[in-house]
Length: 376
Image (cartoon, rainbow, N blue to C red; front, side, top):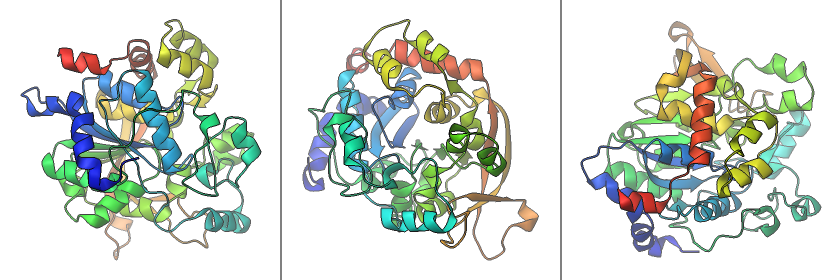
């Protein structure tokens, strides 16, 4: 992998195909996409490309697995679809404070989460069966979990936060920051550059569930799983930093991300067209799971898919001794804490399911490649 000393030259070559279009008069929206990428987790960036957005880069974070493994998934899935002109920047290995040991201690005090992501106890047997690494060494790679193949391309840099800062300085007021994993890299960028947040266009996140505790306890394992907020809980401190920063607009997709299910019927419909991406979705997208990241991407790419939303102020719990560590709490303006600088967010309540599903299907069934950028 390249270290940052050589990343600038590498990045210039890697994203010439996509970002060169930012210098013309098309005025295409620009986005940096931060996610815990996986074998079938590529749909959000296909949706952005399909919508004509200029992807300045993908960023990997530690959430479902370690940032290194997630970044390799991003490189490999881009390569499979001839999209390696989009650069990938590796994010931070660890959250601001949290570690597997701290996380697992919190669970002993307050109860286990159904899905523990990267901080689940290390299980080498499980990994050899084709699952991404958890706990242990964040630098280790599990090749068996790279079902899409091991990438031949390399990271544009190992410093995702600095990449985001550079791009926002280059295009002030133009860049949407999309986050469908942990908010660690964004929090680091906020701390490193006090002007970072205010110079973006917006922050759109997948996560930020509210009032789902009853749902967690009135169903089975899957019901509890899809209503636990691992993206915020794996880095509560980073989540609080990011969600209290002065972004011009913060959109929290929250509970609405659970609205659209990728059930077998949907997977069958997608696979009516066979290509490298539909094959991966059909074989590796978990049946009966919500289209979390895809719903958040749809809201960012086309806000008109939102059928109901509301605005209020939020905080993120950062007390290790609380069972709501890493959960959000909402306030009316008149009742919000007086000694904190909290932000008003746009909370999505519901979306147009039919339109979002169409966006997902079209982007995967008719994926664009770097050749399309060059031809245009």
